[in-house]
Image (cartoon, rainbow, N blue to C red; front, side, top):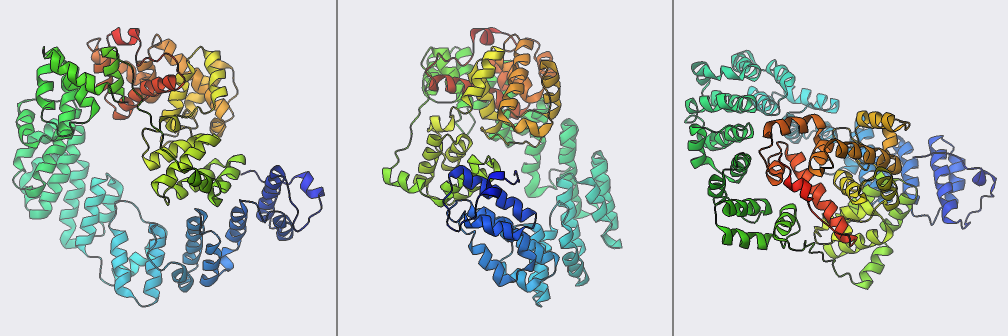
Length: 630
């Protein structure tokens, strides 16, 4: 948030009920925020007088009260919270207040505001510590057990609770063991070793064995040593088999017969887990085939079918897809039709493709292209009552969002929007989404369709966001602007401040390392990772990068999109593995990474949708892309 004084405001007289223009109100608001941060309370009060009708007054109050919360008691905390009851600031302020009370052990003030256990683990520990201070020991110990049973590390706020719980004799070996099992499953080796030190001497051999099986899971072959621990040994065997399967599924399946009878009710789930990793590792043999007869479910059938697609084994594809339960999935309807066509069952294949071509999906579009039929968007906007549209436009939350966007406080706007959407019925959600679309709140329009599940509201799902920027760089790079828009829509849902778990930034989700390299290549300055939040700059680099990939792959969007998502080095490896054996649809469906597989399908589909919405000539895949061998 930009915090600064504005010369105009310093010079203007402060009148209690002065009516300011919107731009002046925004300047006054930012100046008031700055005054709060600098502790200039008198200046803040002067500016606040001009903002009594300003939609973001609660945000101003929030900043002030956040500075004062340590001096409040529980009753006063509730009074302050009442000012924020109509939006997301309520939860944020409540969290801050409770944390401050917990840190200072002001238990009565904490419980005055929090009548029930909070959701946050940290606050939950404060809550049960507060209950213990009131003598409610059994409730406190129940809470301690609840927070204890996790694979993750606990916040420091939980240490006193866990310590008193242990002193009360409530944390026995069984609970330590149960947490060790959770930690093993979540692959937290260091924490597993630490928890083992908490076991009593009588349990230490068992704990040592579990730690050893974590480090060396193939020691599962030492069956007599493990079985000596009876039911606990079976638990260890199940975990070790699954751990082995992630790296050496063939060995896990080899060891499975020695344990399958002991596994009891966990036998089938464990077997399916092992088969899943075997199929993902492209394994198939008589043992797996025999197990599949018993264990096959949709997940395993899908994995097996992908193996067969790569081998073009159409008879086996038809056999397995006949067993799938999710018969409505467009992908498997397409591949069954493809298999039937290859097997000479032309009439049945054509009927399935005709039906599939009516759908808006990658394989629906693929079927339409194969049959020479028009692509179907199946768009249908919901009917919104005029009165409801008017009501939504006057909501205080909508007015706040309007101002937050004007200030470019996108994160706060997104939080406010989501908070409101989740508390409305579907007609109101639809009216809000319509309003967002009409006002050009692009990422909020997309979020609205997701929340309301309005999948057929295609224009709202795919708004023409940042059109001038995309057009500018599309022309500069000689790239279709609908491709750039499709990438941005898939990458960030058009949210300019998006940041992924992989540390990709902005509209087109660019890694800082990639951005730095591309900026150097095109002679642009690189202002650092946060500069990627600037939409024009992000599109400038993203368009340059996808252009480089298109040139690298002879304008093949399938390969360029896969490389944009997973990296050119992986595309190189996949092409080497397929060695020119695969047709386009086979290659796409057998991309090893699910994320990349779905990404490529989405980019081609989204570009087609944008082309159709713009009334342009649309094509899912060019002849060159379709005719290439991969």
